[in-house]
Length: 604
Image 1 (cartoon, one colour):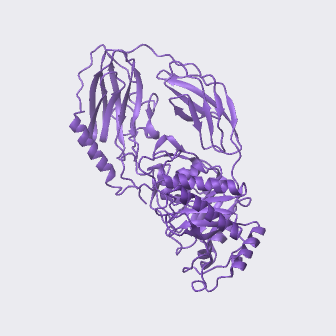
Image 2: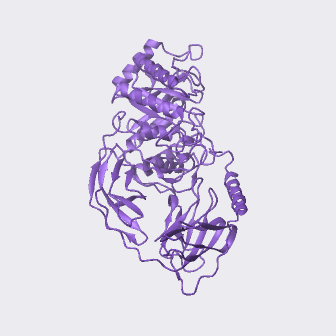
Image 3: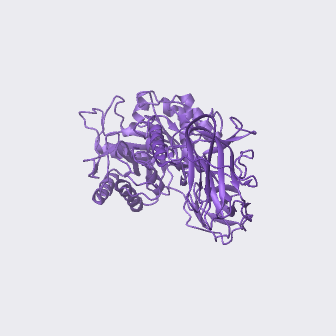
């Protein structure tokens, strides 16, 4: 599934527009020769020491042994849909001085430039360099300029580029001293998955690096940071260093802080989640609540649907006798729910589905949603709610670009409604979500309509809802089916139907990822007991059916780091909650193959 209207055309369209704009502006420059007495001021311009001295956006750059212009290494940087793979370095210079900037590059739409000059910032570029080509430009510093930033970058969504032998020649500035260690480190604002940090500014520092339990977790320019992706009820040790072009300071004094308590779990241990066709019939046949096999830990009643798309008025009723001749009476249905709950199962109402579009466009619709869903939960004595919004239920308005602080009414109203329901029913309320990959993992590449518009505004639209409810969310089981190919954290596309797809998609949820490639907007990792993997129960249930052997390989890799295949996960999660399937009915139709494979899996 693609977020752009035509995935093959957008990168080239952006690049073509950029080329036309830059050419019209006359930004290609030719540098004069540097004076013989001048020196090269760039540190590690040949990348022989890896990325030492360089910083690349969104982890887009890496040293490679081939191709190189000279020496044994060069830079290879790969743009993404919202990241141009800029690699930069801050260099100390003298005021009122002339400098020559040069680099050898390969690739399409490769740029070289300097910013912070104090006069006119410069850049030059090449539309196509199939072999090594030298880019050069020059500038004069301003009267008070003591440092400039030199950079290379590609263009959004285009192929990787290479750069080598970057030089900046001219008079050197005064030596920069390594800054002192930061003081005043303090922790605050802990949640179940994040902790806020702040510290005092350090003279001469241009940035700061945050360490958690000794590992580098963030680099920021200011004096505060929020560390995300943490486990609930866990203590962590934090330190901070100050950095500038001369290097990194010693680490600060250590501050220890703990995350808060976690979420409301479903039945203890691992869980098998299934949807029960309770309100309609299809080829799978009708299954009475009393006949649901005991192996299902969480039963989602499919579906509660709105009276109209924007009403917020959700209704649920059993399948009619004319459509489902085997349907039980309402009294028997409710009695069977109580029997399942007495046996330790959770029974939820699932809202939405393929045909149940829900758009809470107004606060009135939000309030109606809360009251109507509450009535269903109370009437049937249910344990909670599953949100299965599909299609066009959730999308982001133009300009709504930060999942941490959404502004789109349908998103904000849904968040408010779910928080209200959670507060009403308390700690035992079970809240689950079943988004499609398009609305979650695709957010690694694209978010909403994008910085220039033109992308599908639904892309990543579940992320703000998941993020806002992360401390109340019992289970997230993304539908790893009916999906297009999705890029994983290895920056490779993965196709549904095999273990590789499920491993890559689940790894993203358990590791966290930068939204739209922006490392300043990290979607934090969920706790393993909040995550289950969604799969179709049979070939008839949905596209992307995965055979039992591949499902077992998926669980082996994620919980034991065994049988992982080509994809390498960022951790091992024996506490992964389990599996979800569409549906209980289709599994019974298929002889119980899906549930039997789950029951037989050796979790330990």
